[in-house]
Image (cartoon, rainbow, N blue to C red; front, top):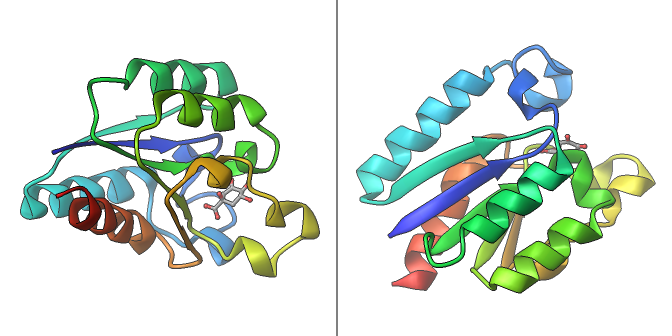
Length: 143
Ligand code: DQA
């Protein structure tokens, strides 16, 4: 089973970025944690990060026929990007949305998730463990 993990803008700054909200683990730490977890679960994983909406749309399009599942944290694009929503719908690969923070307990504008409308499941506010839970969820539901 092949899973693509997509991270949107500013997530490469984890560890530096608003640690009270996102924690002190660096992006490198999180990638290593995801890779180790996937390996132990017998899942092949690729991790992609971009600050650019179009690059994320391109990556989703290219994942058709390549990946069995997608874990996506579109970051700020969650709340704005119909292009990412449409890309997820277009490829129709089961996708799980992850947010490190509890977006429902923050500013009002973070409560709308366009990408979430194309996802089979959402994991919100579980910190970076949410990525691992999303991989487990896909592994369970895709087998
Ligand atoms: C985030 C929440 C978004 O609202 C924010 O723009 C992010 C990160 C999260 O993981 O909690 O960049 O997706």
